[in-house]
Length: 313
Image (cartoon, rainbow, N blue to C red):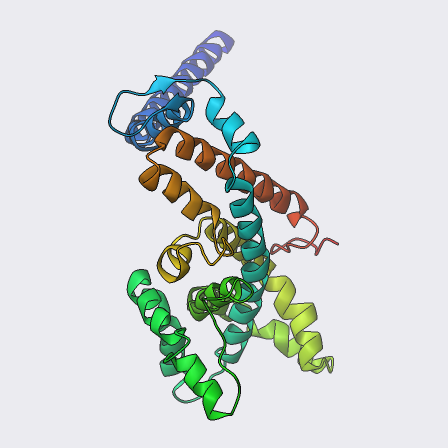
């Protein structure tokens, strides 16, 4: 009897092992399309871009391998790279926090259950779905010093006109205003987060006599910190890669005051025909974004609260 029982146990173990191998094989078969797609559309372009960053290439003739010459030029000789980097950092520092705060404030205002609230939500989100280039052309007319809408409003209240895009002191601030105009995307994500908070949490806070600010600071904000974290990451990456504002509104000027790094990369590639050098600049930008992303992830444990987890400070 013991021998028969041992035989059954061995057969059962072999059957389980065979099933596990079969399931693993099926799993690998399902992964094949993803692996092929990743290799074709991510892996190959990634490796190719590394090669072209090490070449001198005008986009037409065969590339000539020059090693790290492009990177050496960028860091030692390029007269515009560090200026574009400085402008880009200012732009990120200026726009990302304000966009987050504006988006959150709008979401708090539009999280009310009042008649017609859906119309207001649609109005604030509408700029996001408009074509970016068309919206920027519209803003170009709004910013015009002589007949633009903003200066006409200033004249109505007897204030002097402002050279929104013509002065190096105001140009970067002006293109930031355009970014704030499209804050509806940030708002709608915050709004979805606010509406996912269970109502009984607020009811418990109200029973305890918490004020509006205490409910926001001790209940609402901790509950949406994962969304704040996600918005910070995506907003920072998007700001580093901003291009249309500088290209359409100011063309990097005046006096390089809006010369964002993406616009510098465009100039290097499509105006100077230095594609190899432009790709090297892209890799420098990639490393910068990667460093900041890692830092934000590293410190996220200090302020991000997840459900079924204690709030870490």
